[in-house]
Length: 521
Image 1 (cartoon, one colour):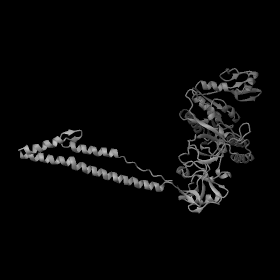
Image 2 (image 1 turned 180 degrees about the horizontal axis):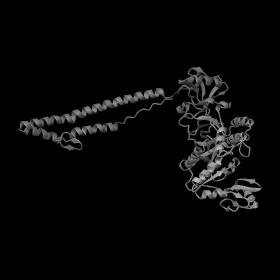
Image 3 (image 1 turned 90 degrees about the vertical axis):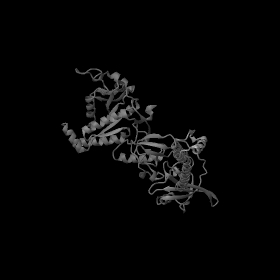
Image 4 (image 1 turned 120 degrees about the horizontal axis):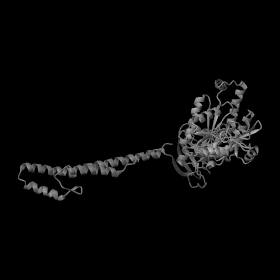
C-alpha cells in the first residue's frame, strides 16, 4: 500500500525571515533614529523643518532625496515584501491541500453503507503483483470470513480488515458461497486497487496492546509446501533446525506469526509457523521423523530420553562477562579433527585456554602428578560422585573409570580461562543442564575423498569403510543433536577450520549470543 508524506509548512520562520529583511531596510538609512525597531515620528517632523530652514540648495536637495527615500524604505518596500509573503502562503496552502487530496485517494478507504438490508463497509486496498495481502480466510457455512490478519501486510497496515469480517464481494465479484480455494485463486490474479464489500464482524475488538516478542530456536525443519494443515501456504514461513525465530503474534495458538532472525528487513510480511501446542505441527513433524528413521537415523527429533517430539525452545540474548567465560565444547566423530583443534588452541594460548582435568580410578604413573594430569580417586569415591550427578561424561577403559566432573569445569571457569571440552553427544544434555552456559561447536568431516587426503598427511591410512562410517556418524549426530549446536565448522582445511574456530570464540567477547531463556533464570 502506498502512503503519501505531506510536507509541513511553518509560517513563523518565514515571517521572522521577512521581519529581518524589513529591519535591514530601516537600518540602511543611518540618518534616522531607531526606536524599538521602528523610525520615530519626531524624526520625520524634524526632517520637514530642516528642509524649509535649510538655505543651502545642495543640502536641501540631499535632504529631500533622503526624505523620499525614507518613504520608500518605510512603506513601499515592506508592503511589497508582505505581499510576497501572502502569495507564498496561499501557494503553499494550495499545495498542501492538493497533496492531502492525492494522499486521500492513494491511502486505503472505508465507507459504511447498506446492502440488501445489511450494514456493510466498502474497503479499498492497494495490492502489488505477486504480493499477498496478508490475510487468511475460512469458510463458515456458505460465507467467506477473514480468519487472520498477518502483521506487516497491506491488510494489517490499513487497519480496515478485521478478523470475523465476512467478504461479500471483491472488485464486484461475488464471494459468498465460494470455497476458500476459489477465493485464493481470485485474489492471486488481482493487483492494484482491490475493493472489498464486507459485513463487519460483530465481535468486540479487544483493546490494542503491544505484544511481547518471543524468540525461539526451532528444533525441526519446516517447509510450508509439505504441510497440508497450513491455512495459506503463501504465508507459511520455512525454517531449518537451529534457526532463531522471532514470534510477534500468538493470537492463534495453532499458527503463530514470526520472522526468521536476520530476515526482518527482507521479509516485511510475517510468516505463519506451527504453534507450540499445535498438534497438527507435531503430527507433521512426526511424519518427517518417520521418513528419516526409515533411512536409518534413529531418535531424530526426540529429546535424550526419547519421550517427546521437540518443537521450540525460548531463547534470550546473553553477553558473557569478562570474568566468567563460557566453556567451549567441540563435538565431532572420530577423525573429524576436533581433538587436534583443541590441542592447537591449548598450545598457542595456554594462558587463555585450559582443559578440565579428568578423574580416573587407575593408579598414577611415574611422570603423572595428581591434579595436573588426572585427579586420582578410588573407585568407591568415583561411583559416589557419579551417583550424585557430578560427572558431565564418564566411561570405563580396561577396567578403570574415567570422567570429566563439573567441579573440574568450574575450576577452569573461576580461573578466568576458557574451558575446552571434547565430548560425546550423549553428554550434551547434562552439560546444558548445568549452569555453565556452554557454547557448542560441531566439527564436521569433509567429503570422503578429502578426508582420506587429510588423514594421509598425518600418516594414517584408514579403510574406505572407516571413512564412510565417520561421515555417516557425523550426519547422524547432526540430525539427532543439531538443535544443540551453536555453530558448525566443516574441517575441509585444518588451518581454515582453526581460524574459524578462533573467530567464533573471539565473538563471544564482542557480541551477545542466543542462549536458552531458562539459563538466565
